[in-house]
Image (cartoon, rainbow, N blue to C red; front, side, top):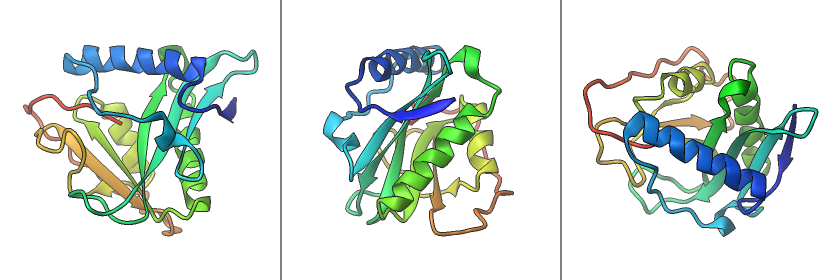
Length: 180
């Protein structure tokens, strides 16, 4: 697998983002309504990457964008994960973990201090991945912060241990929320 920084407007990025929106519809009933600006993913303030198999088929996306304090739950130096997605046929091979670590290292090199994300309780696979990588619950932020089923997580990018055994509690019976 190869991870390429392609930019938000790249055709493969757009294709995969359309697929992830359909995934959100299946899991939550609606697409993610969070506003995204392509410029948010331009270096040095973010990155948008696509993972490819050896034949050049796009398998998944991962992105981060800089965030600063001023909004509830966010702090100066945050990097927010957006559009983490792996196609169904590529799941179970460690692709999402590799993409997540790519994002963390890229954000760290850009001077970001903490990775943050918003996901939802209908994505147990994502919650398990983030917990195994040391992400812990943080104050809710973003478009869906008022939804009971929204789950916001964060990880200090300068913590060498990463608290890999962290548990993430998944709320039950709540209203819909949409993931990163």
